[in-house]
Amino acid sequence: MIVPGWMRWTRRSLTAAGATLALAAGLLVGTASTSQAAAQGPCDIYAAGGTPCVAAHSTTRALYAAYNGSLYQVKRSSDSAVLNIGVLSAGGYANAAAQDSFCAGTSCVITVVYDQSGKGNNLTQAPGGGEAGGPDTLANAYAAPITVGGHEAYGVYVAAGTGYRDDSTSGIATGDAAEGIYAVFDGTHYNGGCCFDYGNAETSNNNTGNGHMEAVYFGNIKVWGYGTGNGPWVMADLENGLYSGVNAGYNAGNPTVSSRFLTAVVKGGPNQWAIRSGNAQSGSLSTSYSGARPAGYNPMHKEGAILLGIGGDNSKGSAGTFYEGVMTSGYPSDATENAVQANITAAGYSTSTAAAGTLTPGSRISLRATTACCTSDYVRHDDSDSQVVISAISSASTATDKADATWIVRAGLANSSCLSFESANDPGQYLRHSNFQLYLVGTDNSTLFAQDATFCPQTGHNGQGYSFQSVNYTTKYLRHYNYTVYLASDGGSNAWDSATSWSDDSSWLVAQPWG
Image (tube, rainbow, N blue to C red; front, top):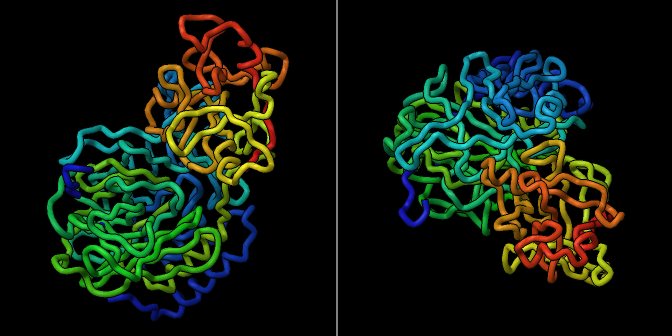
């Protein structure tokens, strides 16, 4: 999709009795235990509805009941070795423990998201395109931890500059042929950049005109289209336009969505298309639009490439997190999609959690200073800027102040044996040092960011709590100085390296979270 210079998307009926029975069985999946592999996967349900999957991507679970292959591949930074991550059992959940073991003591990126449909439509590192050069960056394999059905799993965390693509596909809709697309996203991770897409795009990585794309878009950009409220919205990237409905610009039927886990659907056929969405943890799908194509988009000219996290011309200013998605041959019925939604909610998507107040990844914590002056002070960010400071927090503090002093422990982005700290109220924003001062910054999936945002806990220098060693400056630790948090050594050229009170200032107690 071309971006402005200042910144740089016949309903089928079910007539066969067998298909109807299969869809009913799909709906019953919603009552199954989430600790077991599903009796049907989304692609089994689509096949029963006469619209089989021609691409099926997930880093969290199998999308067919019989699938027992690889979900994705990771590459570790220490030696560039790769490992395919499969499922715990046929039709089951990702074997995230294999990733944890393979990546221990180093960092990993996701290099391939495998196609489970058998058509070989694997997503790999996107090349450059007409809007931006490449290759694009790869997602940090630890940046999007969750649980599914009670099992640890990881999503594909897309920061600006990250993108995946397959320009040589098999079975994907071209021209005006009908197709369906759904994806499960993190509904709290988005931005106003172009364009966090999953779906059908140009094979040349260039903008080749109206109707040459058909992809699910999620975010709050308003340049081409938008809905009610402030966003984010589920829209369709049809090339040269993100459409929230039949009209360019505003469409009142497209609501702001706010689910932590979001099911987003776009489907299209000859002069017919629809947008649907729902909470991926519970409930049904709602339809934002269903009807004729926008002016200038009938017929469509789809080309059949697949992309994730970028626009058709490799516009890559977007952000988002992907967990699973498929593309079908044919226009799925609402009944089929409703059965798929029931399957998704039964899968048991949930945030990765651990006992609060511990350094276990997934735990929510607050970090309290131990220096005599400041034992009521906690590490926090301030919405007025990106600096990280310490300030007094108490039961009388505002809800905002308490949330600003709350962090989610994550496996270290640069070394999974160490830790990173994600803001509890600004998802995707991490503690990161720059010029030895600590800031709250969104990851860009770069190696440098991962290193700057990773800290290794040690016994507190003053015998209390913990001291947090920088993974890339091993003589420096998190330290408060004049109520600002720095990366400091015990003596050095910077004012914050002062040996005075260094042991106390660089020791922290891990406390129960304020927010």
